[in-house]
Length: 187
Ligand code: PNS
Image (cartoon, rainbow, N blue to C red; front, side):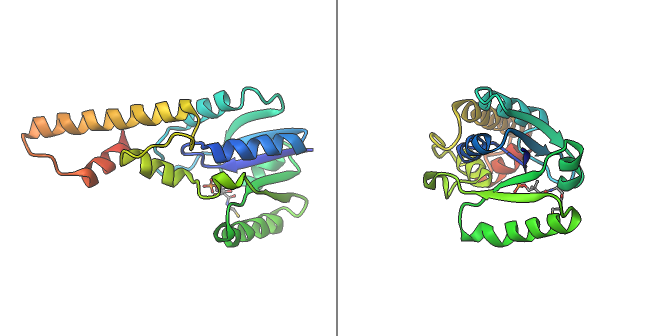
């Protein structure tokens, strides 16, 4: 059976990788599908996220990476997948995931959503927290693969250089971390 694993993956984490590995063991084919969402302004470009996921999953022969826009169910139909894989970390995920699964079933009754739990050591892990911890200088070791950590460091360095350049140009003192975070998002 072919399944898709849709998400934002901004950035992909070890929790995502754990789920991909589990999914690759129960499905014949698994397509990790990155949502192209023009309304969100992600930290990483679609191309960057695709490259990171491709590198992270290169050992899994039945896993491919793709991007999509529009409805997840339409994409699933297009690639002839019969299931949508989603991860549930804690009870707090459940309500949102249930709502989404039921809506997807209403839209496309033939498509099943399959929930899997990542290893408990990743149950607190989210892309949002990884971004925040990295931007505030905390350690993200063991939360993301080394290549993602490296990309995050590059983004943060770039944002700091950009902010320093702006300060020098304006000849104004540092405005603190809050300001630098907003720059990081745009870098
Ligand atoms: O990683 P995320 O951000 O939790 O993934 C959410 C995602 C991409 C699975 C969800 O937003 C989605 O399916 N978006 C595509 C648009 C869509 O189908 N919306 C209706 C969902 S019921």
